[in-house]
Length: 31
Image (tube, rainbow, N blue to C red; front, side):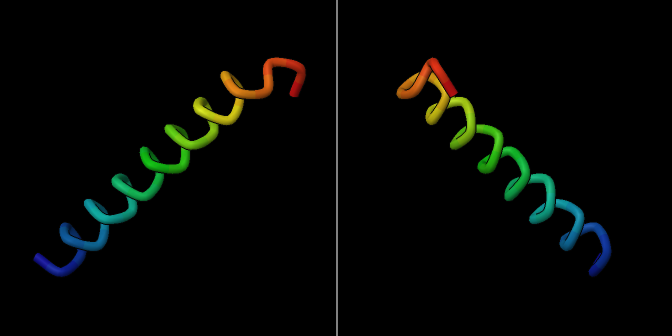
């Protein structure tokens, strides 16, 4: 249960990071 919860939060934070990276690349296409 604990490991599953930790894994879920890790996946969520990773998805959020990828979302921010994609947003940044659309704002700055020369990056």
